[in-house]
Length: 511
Image 1 (tube, one colour):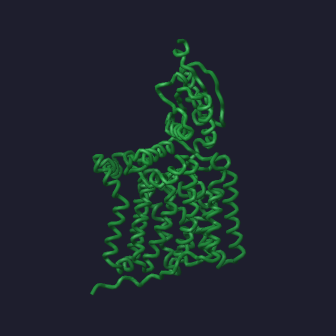
Image 2 (spheres, one colour):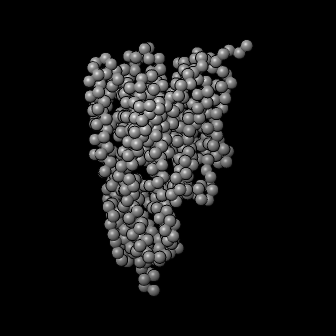
Image 3 (cartoon, rainbow, N blue to C red):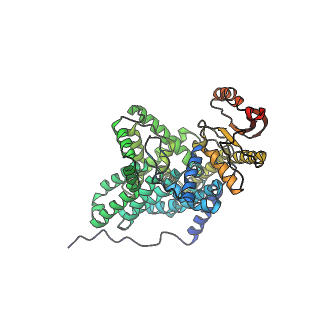
């Protein structure tokens, strides 16, 4: 007779429909308001976003489906296409308006309040900690920043929360939750490729630590879950590799073998990765400086270790925060801030546990004061930095470039052309990557049924120049040696950081 699976897990509805439910819905609204603050003017729509949106457009309108998503910082390796296919929904309803599409993903991030509450409740079994975690996530400076980055990588936040939520339910006896662990694992990797490595490392550590509990479950469930994880994680990449001479596999093997990619000494990697972890934590928790961030991180790990035996599930959070850091250090590749998105929910739950520890073991008033202070700091940071787009990692090189100015520039070009054939050239950062401008011209032009820019008709040329504060000499030389030779300057207009020049080709003008 086959062994019985682990004890039946309670099927109690995790969504509280009373007072807490109302609080959570209110927090969803608060989170949405914070994340959409100053929209659409302050959207960052750069060349990478333009490239992604052109692919989304091709999928939605021309049915040019893709098995892969945006490129990673490793040559030949790509994220999954989950962002593209989710974006099709708002694309079709808005004629590809970046603002509406950004709001769609902001809504997903706002409803992630529920995911944070659920995983916190499953982990701590404390309603107070769970509600505090949801509040802190709603106003978290870093979480809000990530949600305004028009990219699929920030989908890691809700997916990681659900991954650990279902993992906790599985360890508590609900066998079927393992299927959802497998699905969320695959989707996490589709959003950010390195999540395959980070999440599997944490998952494997958890499995080894709880091996007896895991092995008690039905072997059919374990095998089926493994197959589901493979399908959702590498299925599309495997098909892509079959069609492209195993491009991704070869790139990964080259990276592992050290024949490709950038590597640094282990000691430097440890310092660099820890420094980036602290910076990411500082933004996520809305802390003012590195020193305080280090104190808070030590407090989180200290409280988790102190309660390691009293709270049997706290080891999950400890592994969640610790293992990805170790993996990134060992990789010796140089960690980017977005690689730490998988830790966002865990950090917020961790600091909520510390505040609850203060409440229970020192004094409730001090706990309340700590919570209010942290919430206030996040709110202050957001309203201080959001208007200038500073302290946002994805816009650090060009904080003053705004979508509002881009729209005004494009509308100005269309108005000046007044139906005449024209073309444009743009100075962008990264240099001369036109995709962002090409998409905006397409979106505004087709929506208003205006003739689109045409390279065959460059007799009338509009030069769009974004101020390059990082390399003004290069920009000045480019303007003198190149732009000045493009024809006679007829008119110019400035919109924020952007100047638009109308030029007439000299040879055409002479004729």
